[in-house]
Amino acid sequence: MYEQLQEEAAALNVVIKETYLPGRLKGLYGENEILINENIETSIEKTCILAEELGHHHYTVGDIIDQSKIMNIKQEKLTRRWAFRKLIPLDGFLYAFNHGCRSRYEIAELLNVTEHFLTESLNYYKERYGLFVRIDDLHVLFLDPLSIHKQL
Image 1 (cartoon, helix red, strand yellow):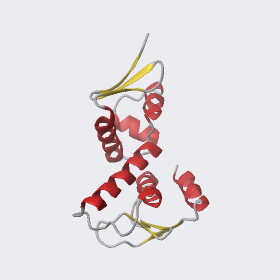
Image 2 (tube, rainbow, N blue to C red):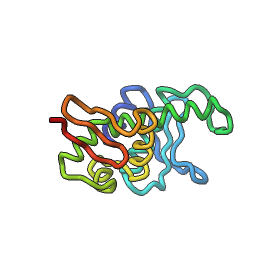
Image 3 (cartoon, rainbow, N blue to C red):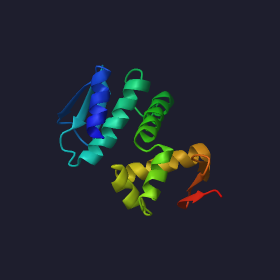
Image 4 (cartoon, helix red, strand yellow):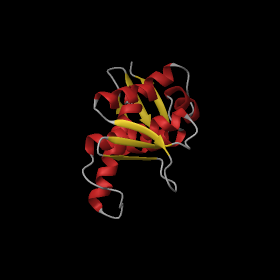
């Protein structure tokens, strides 16, 4: 998926660079350039960071680093939501359950995201839909506890 996101960025004329970033920064976006912390060890975590930074390309206006401002917080939430929908669409859970995944660890591993990213995406989906959401005509995704039920 990291490569697909790189291709998407290239199609949008967004340059990606892996470089040193100070402190706990994992990624930054600005002026059609994404910086990814070179010290991130796994491609799975890089994928999650890149997805969020691409979300900044689509939704962010100006410098939003100061997260004490309401407008900056709102823009940050928009980018994260975009990343969640991009990497873990609702039918991704159906895909994972159909492949035998039952734990969050197994789902995250199959979908190539970190467990933290999966947990945050579940929180987003719960915030958006409540405790359950219909995936298609046959399946309902229960978000807490996490399960899928087939309608008869």
